[in-house]
Image (cartoon, rainbow over all chains, first blue to last red; front, side, top):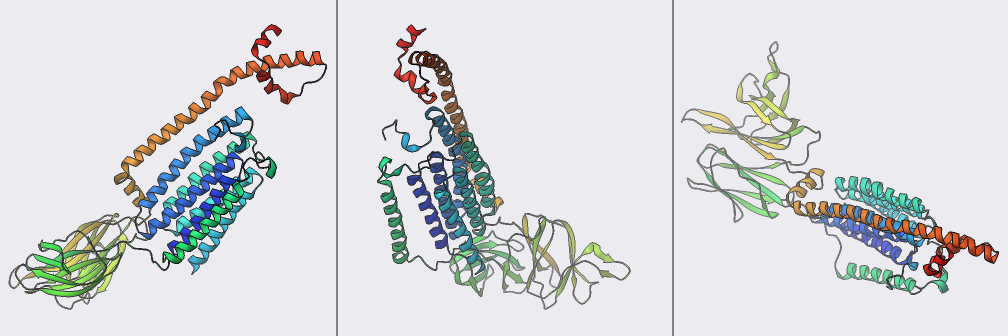
Length: 100
Length: 423
């Protein structure tokens, strides 16, 4: 049986990669995909913990996260399509109307 | 060992695909690499004993969500957009790369520190706690049963069984105390995840105690059910369990044997198709002697049945064998769709409903976002027509061709007050 720690390590690596993608890539769709990668990494950690404690609450949480991610992707991609239609670009460096 | 290698390979592929996703110039390639990572994670879910989530991961994530991504990438023609390096001088976020590097290094440092300081090693995963129940097949009155100092059965009459109760793992002394007085003890080592029946049996003044483990893991074939039988008949006689309807009248032999030669005071289990069964317990050496009949015994597929063949004293000289049947709903396996569904509809009913509302809100939200975007678009098209005729006028006056790319900027630079006199 592979130790829970190994899964957590892998989860951390994937989460870090996702975070780097969010910070480094300028394409809004790619930033979105990196966020999905981070969500997947947390899911992996939750399932590993669920097995560790023999408690399937963690698996229920993953079920909820996947559902919320589906909703989030639908809304987010609608926003990206809207932004692309108005600005003809999805480079997030060019989206600075909010002065953020 | 195989599982470790599998983990290493799947994990390496998932990480490599994630890295490739970040480095790909083409957004479509990135999406495809992300699908590889998600499939890898679903394999890890399988290895983590959650087949349901593995399937959800593939269908919802690698299927629905990634198709949505690919669709939007193709729709916008955004394969190459925003991927070109703006160059260090042009980028307004020059500080990002060092920050990311510092973050990654900090994370790695934290992991190392946690591994060294936090003693994160060699923890075996916890299993479900040990559980025990008491079956009283001793025909001399009610009994109290203690496991260590914990009372697990209080005044349990003959032929009855308690529910399973959780106990800690470790070594205990099981103490069976008949109401009539006296005490019988047995040594018991409880193990995590093991279900143990404490069976009191016998017809004497003091009962005897047997510890019989019961297997609640899923049966191999769907529609089957597991029956565990304990032979508590007084004496040393072994018995055989046969199908009462399978008697061959020519040879006087039962064709269909369920359990052959079950020795006295031992336990055996068998997986059989669920349904009403007509079984017969016969003597091992002489199949023509019926010990007891189990007529129309219902065996349901979701239940796990324990049958204790107990002696019941009818009078001082007469006794008969009475089957004590205890049916327990088999526990759904950890991580199985049934277990997830059970939790979802009991413990997590309210969050599930809220989630439904959230999805509804997201759906309405998407429609609103797209609609608010569509209405000004029509006005914009009208304005673009105006501005296009304007550009023609300007082009005719200047005598030069106006570049098409300048067109959207014109309404901003040319106020509408100026456009009206032109008409």
